[in-house]
Length: 78
Image (tube, rainbow, N blue to C red; front, side, top):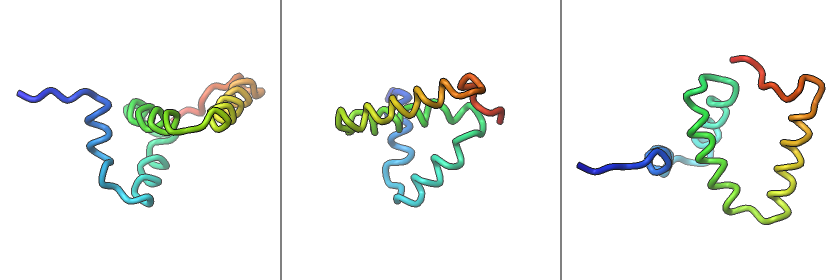
């Protein structure tokens, strides 16, 4: 019996997707069912690891701004 961890299963699922298909996966997952959040987390982890320190800083700045907006950073309900 082969055991595949969650990260590998998610990567395998989108590995052969085109850029358009990857965009669709992200757009369809944002603000929808919470079951998609682990997948988005794995995709974000891949982006983070390939980003420069400057790019990582920009992402953190953007997240920090979002979390400190008037609504307290609460995500909109699905």
